[in-house]
Image (cartoon, rainbow, N blue to C red; front, side, top):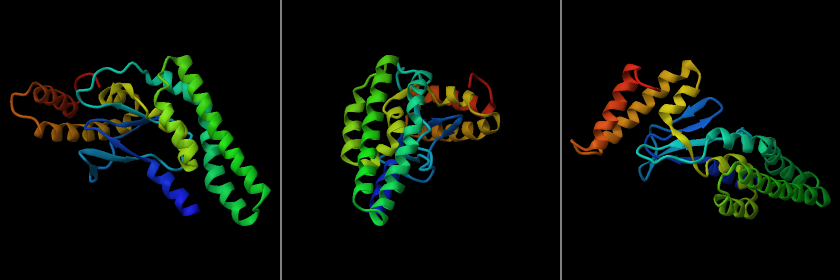
Length: 224
């Protein structure tokens, strides 16, 4: 049971990214694995030890503008973040311990507390999204999954942030990460842009636009 719960949680930490898309979280930018792809999407992984840190996806290449500002979403999720850490302790530590060492009322109490915490997180996120002008529609499917499969509720805060793309692409977010990480991030983005260019025909306007962006990234020019 413990192994199944942990496996479900780890599987839920896997995120698929479009070409040129990145995960952004507290000054860190990740473009996923360079070796693994599923149906043309890059496989990335959330840190399983930090479910209390919100994560967001940048806009993919050629995507239209998003009406969700990352700063607004981060502020909306901030008060709920600590509850994500609590849920990790309840589901993967307290419940297994009570199941094997203190079955009966202690286990039942821990189970009820885990469900109450999941429901409270869902309600709090929906309320704060509403106040911030962020659509709550994605929370319907997410919330059902969190309550139907308790291990999925550990990622409540991060999955809420990943329910939409933030208001900027990876180039814009490179500005927000520490200087020592920018060169590596630019190199990873340039490599993905080069892959995208190979899939487009010569003369395609998108290919020409990507070539300009790739040149800016490699030369360190342009607005990054």
